[in-house]
Structure formats: C-alpha cells, structure tokens
Length: 368
Ligand SMILES: C[S@@+](CC[C@H](N)C(=O)[O-])C[C@H]1O[C@@H](n2cnc3c(N)ncnc32)[C@H](O)[C@@H]1O
Image (cartoon, rainbow, N blue to C red):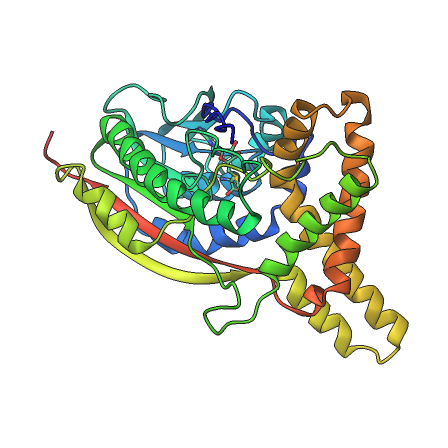
C-alpha cells in the first residue's frame, strides 16, 4: 500500500464572495450583529477615540456598529474608524457605505481607515484602540484545514477535521487575543460575536442546517457524475472556520495571563429570517402552487447565504483540481441551482436554518 503524502496547510487568504455578494446574502450575520449590540451600550470614550472592526467584510453589519459607537462619542470628538479584513476582501463595497456613519452632530470628525491584513498579524499600532470588535469573523482559522484524503470516508474526514480544527481554533484565538491585547488600550474593550456549535438534529432541536450542507454535497456529486466537475471536487471546499463556546473563550482568555477579563457573555440562537418570512407568507394562502413557491424562495435565499461564504473556496478548489477557469462561474451557478432543488426535495425547506452564537465582551486589563 502506498502511503499518502500529507499535504501542507497553507495560510487562508480567501475572503467572501465579492461584488457586494456577501453584503446581499448575509442576513443572518446581520442579525447576529444586532443581537450583539447590547454589549456596546453605555461605552464611553475620550475626545480622540479609535474603533476597529476585525474581519469587516463588505461592511453591511460593520457600519451599524460604527454608527452606534460614533453616536456615543462626546461632541467635538475626532475618531479613527478602521476596517480590517484580508487583502482579497472586496473593500470597494465597504467604501461605498462609509457615508452611512457620518455623524448627525457635525462637531464630530471621522477619519476612516482600511487595513488589508490578516488579523493574525499586527493590525494597529500598540496601545491605540479603544473599542475592537469582531462579528462572525474570529472563528475563521489562520490556516486552511487539510482536505479529505482518498482513503477517508466523508464521515471519517469530518471527524478528523473537527478534531484538528478544535486545536487550531484554540491556538488561533490565543494569538488573536495576544495581538489585540497589544493594540487595545488598558481599559479598552474587545467585543465578539462568534458562531457556536449549532443544532444538528442530535440535540433535540430539528433544523434544516444539516440538510442544507448535504444538499450542496449532493449537488457536487451530481456534477461530478455528469463529468462537469473534476473528481474530488468536494474534498477541500470547506471554509477554514470552527465554532467557539463560552468555555473555549474562557480557556483562551486564561492563557493570556490576565491581559483580558471576561466582562459579559451570553448565548443566543440566531435563526435565518427567511424562514420566518416563509411562515408568514404561508399564512396568507392555501394554494399548493403558492406554498411550493414560498418554499423555493426560502431555499433560494438560504442557499445563496451559504454560498456567499463557500463560493470563493469552492471555485479555488475546483480550479486547483483542473476545472477550466472560464467554465467555473457557469458550473457554480448550476451547482447553486441543484443545491436549491435538493434542499427542497429533502424537506429542508420546511425547517428553520439557524446558527447558535456566543457573544462576549472582554475588557483589556489595566495591567500593562
Ligand atoms: C462571515 S464574514 C463576517 C463579516 C462581517 N463581520 C459580518 O458580521 O457580516 C468573515 C470575515 O472575516 C474575514 N477574515 C477571515 N480570516 C481573516 C483574517 N485572518 N484576517 C482578517 N479577516 C479575516 C473574512 O474575509 C470575512 O470577510
């Protein structure tokens, strides 16, 4: 038997689907940001504050937080607002949203900054940041997980990947906290919304989450069988992300030698709002065709939501496996359409898609 060569683990450089696609399909992350806003209540700052969003993407959620922080500044303040993400991020879409944070009080002056760099590197000068926040971003790992090997079943691969990601996520979170610990001023805050392990039909809550992922892998199988995708097209498309819990946060904070203190933490399930919209629509009619159309509309929204995150990883992997670059968008669209059909056919479109989140507010200790 030939021993499989262990591939190396490259650093992740891939951002979300560009051309504003993430902004248009990130309704659930937007709701997660809203659920996090109570942690920003009552924060006070001096007249020259600095606010930084780590992993801002195209800015739809980020701007709401910045608006809130700017509104809490005293009159005659100047403020640096910095938006950080990977260099491959579509910052142009974010820049177009900057006017939305113009303060109602014209005595406040805003200096926006774009910082294209990994947040696993230093992002801001030491001791300059008053409020750091990271919404749906720090669960993103520094390195790409190893892909599925030829000898592994999909189940074995998912098991291995989860175990490896648990270790990587702990290491990465400590690194993130250490780096932000240098950048945030003593007394400053770091506020985080991070996906947590979600309902997967094994914890008593029935959700459409698993069916959504399975629909995607089914669609890829269909396209591989049809010869439209190269073999192994499903093996390395998982984004490099892992979930966090209150316990994993507390464990990482503990390793920062009292640099950070947990000031507040809560958990919440954040359902995708398209499910509620479908339920409301269904109340209006008994027409079977209309009911079917509502389900299809729901399927379309949640598949587009999932693919706004998966798309760049799928395309990158498929091209690496030999798919011609010129055909990639067409095949991707076909994959998206089949995923929507599969999600409806499997009954997923009658179930809520939801993500558990953990919300954490950390205070930078006064100790230098
Ligand atoms: C799911 S999006 C969340 C975006 C936004 N904060 C929101 O709440 O909608 C995750 C973001 O984290 C960014 N990201 C992932 N790894 C990163 C890294 N190492 N450094 C900076 N940003 C990163 C991704 O590019 C992406 O824009």
